[in-house]
Image (cartoon, rainbow, N blue to C red; front, side):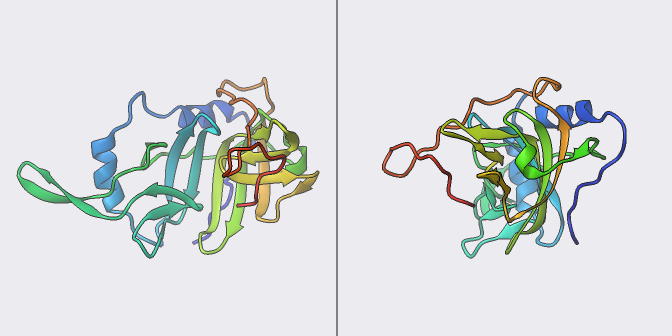
Length: 208
């Protein structure tokens, strides 16, 4: 099953904003059980949240690694299946990663906005982007675009590159700008500080 952007006319920004807000608290116990039931081939949506990328939704088909970790759109959301005692009975669980805010999350039914060239997206824009990369297939990421502090032409949504050096990223196949920076209520992260493994700043981020 392919995953694409389901677009409609009208103002749907608040609907996406609500989805990105998510629950007031993480339901870790509930997510452990839900993640244990992840089935390859069945599309799912996860809400992620980090200081670096802000809140973003990923909708795609879960991918199980050789170590039994769960990824959606190349993003690690849970570790291998395990067991946990509840009411003196062992139950199957998977522990969610710390940045997982909600699983399963409910994506907006539709996305309203303007189809936009990836290289025209700016830091703080509220966007939805469709990507394609094996072995994850086609998946959709929705959230606030972020630019690198050292190079504002390097724009990402979540950990995926939208554009760099004035050109669309090769894995980005479609972009909808839901609202420009300043025209939505979703919190905007600061410009990204790109750090290499040796702790020094880099002017470019490596492609995912």
